[in-house]
Image (cartoon, rainbow, N blue to C red):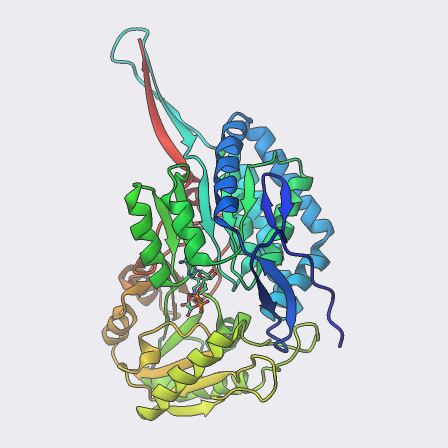
Length: 479
Ligand code: NAD
């Protein structure tokens, strides 16, 4: 099956496409077969200073644009992308390896989120207060925070770049964004849409290259007034320290370790049927993926049987084959992580119910894997696997399951299945997580705040909270 063509890669700074010119390059790899898709130019120190200066000017221009005009630009960018959705879906499949159907789902959600941000631009409301002095005016207004530095990962690259850009632009901010080294073309196509939609030069800059160098340079600059980061927790920790130097606020989404509690009163087969596609979606590389399943004694065997049967039925292959249900892992680092985490669990006595090894060949394929009897101190029970592996454990008392769910320092997506209303309320109240799904895995809709607690980060994307993250409050008193 032949793959569609990849696109040229460049830095997008002040409305100019920059590549070549003696800049270093690195290869972007196709996870399906390990081949090289393209060569990505690396931003130099001068490029980053140009991006900062351009964002500073871009902010001055953009903050003067009315909310209605800002919304219109975002809507035109959405329309441009919608007309070219097939091309963007193909890029997503090329860069990440995900099945086209999942790429389509991601793009649909991206466009919905961007549209929602455009609509919200018109609803950034302040308020007036009763004056302390006759005829005085006391006004609370919401203003854009300023130029934003954004960093997005490779797992859902259209959604995580599209919604960061659209929310910041809706609020009136400019942005310098660095997509992942593995998925630059997806972000560049979204930037192209904004250029075609008439976004003034400098309001959006895209920089590519060495992540540590880029984040250190951008965050050291006083031009940057806000940071938005989605990615691994150690990197978030580092960026929070860098941001602290200039007291720059930061929104961070750092992943989790999704617990799932399946109670003995749940519709077990329905729970398993919902769990399998959500676990193996995007080859497990989702920050809200269900990972640690805790199943009550009476329904444990039925759940394991249904889940393992579902995992075994998943067809692996090229994302461009309509029969494929799971593509490769997005990069070779995930293969190493799977080998290590699963090897450690098995060495500690876990039972491999299915999967457990790499698929022979050049691509980064890993079998859908299910482990049972995994001790809680195994690495996989303590570190986010971010891959196609589920652990299933047994519990007797609900209190114990809640304690296990809350045991880790993460709290992003957490789930429970029960048909008891009182248990549903109890679980919703007691699970420490930014998002709790009872009888559902459905999150990510633009109107719902998406974010974690504890070491999963702070702040939200989506929801009115997601626009708020790019605003500051001003109180004006006129007498
Ligand atoms: P990694 O450290 O190679 O980098 C992941 C992302 O962080 C990349 O996009 C990279 O460009 C960026 N990054 C790395 N160092 C950076 C820096 N100093 N400044 C700015 N950005 C930087 O990690 P990985 O191997 O891709 O993933 C490992 C783990 O990261 C996963 O197991 C998962 O837990 C987590 N992760 C989480 C999300 C999420 O959605 N929360 C997304 C991707 C990865």
